[in-house]
Amino acid sequence: MKIGEIPQNEIGIMLKSPRGLTLEVGPFKVRVKTRNNYFPPFLQKLYPQFPVLECPSLSDFHVFLDTPVAWRRFIRPQVIFRENGDKLFEPFPANMCGPLFEWGWNWCIGTRAHQYLILHSAVIEKNGIAVIMPAYPGSGKSTLCAALMLSGWRLLSDEFGLIRCDGGIDPIPRPIPLKNQSISVIRDFSTDAVIGPLFPKTRKGTVAHLAPTERSVKQMKKPATAAYIIFPKFHPKTVTALKPVKSSYALMKLATNAFNYEVLGAEGFKRVARLIRQCECYNFSYSKLEEALPLFDSLVS
Amino acid sequence: MWEVWPDEVVVFNPLSGETHQLNDMAAQVLSWLESSPQTIESLVVSYCDQFGIDESDKDVERLISGLLKEFDDLGLAEPVE
Image 1 (cartoon, chains in turn red, purple):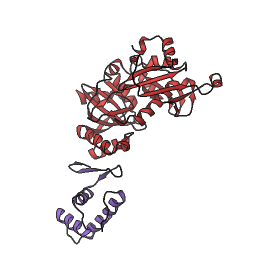
Image 2 (cartoon, chains in turn orange, yellow):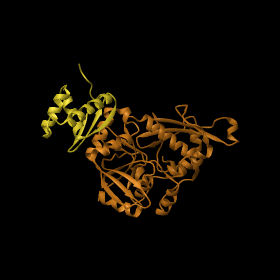
Image 3 (cartoon, one colour):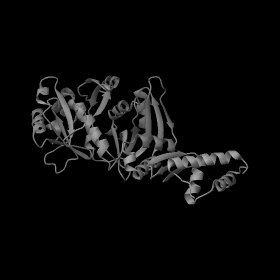
Image 4 (cartoon, chains in turn purple, brown):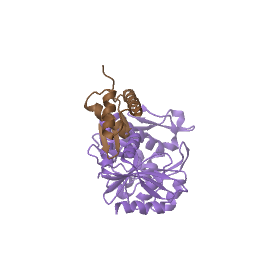
């Protein structure tokens, strides 16, 4: 059964039950428990296509979105992210439960899923060809990734390039966190954009999440092979241009971008080197989505 | 572990877990050291011979000495008795 097929009050009951609710997202199963009332609508708006596992044998992550102390339920209510019972971060305001779940789960994946080389990058696919877009602050990666997804590309991830030992990339098509001006840019870009509630005054400014497309979720078990590594850089006054970069430069840049390159040691080097051998690598500057999108389409046509 | 392209080299040092991008000279000298221990003098002779440089050119010796120190600092090579 999918999240979107379950009435919201039943989702709330499942989340409050001792077993919690187990969600399957790409290669991971995450069990979530919470009494937070802001979380069921967040889940239903942004994860409607994802399956709920009724009798999961094993879960990869056990998340409890906890309430700190009783009186905090009434005065400035808060929520705490616990994984396997451990409190990992300072409490958030209770209405920030959704973003806290997203950030906390990111942390869990980035620090635990060492069966993968975990790139901090977006991965999108069209016509069987995947493009890796490593993330750097202000690169405009999420906006570009969101626009590509809404233009028919399959989202594998906006946050993680999960590189397997055979070089394939496993999808984890979770909601895309849009920040500040990107929210209105994407809202204006497509009427198909399903955008969750606005969360103002976070450390990253105002944040809202864009739900993955149905196609991306339907194919979340289908790995992809990358043919391009593109380092995007948004600047409002730049000219749209794709410039090849040296392989050694791309390798060093990708290695420093990975969450667990040092953890994997020689295996990390092998996986990055393999990606560089199989991909064309470019720096990409852009200022307008309407110029960037045809260029990406031309790469895979 | 080496990753080599026509004019680019990157090496991974499994002992330190660090990755290094090498220029042509560093890559050549490190590859000779990988095959067998060498003296500075023998490295200078090999390098000058390979690239047609006069052996009396003191810059080559200075650069190779500097490289060996860097390799030692990075754990890529070490002096032997």
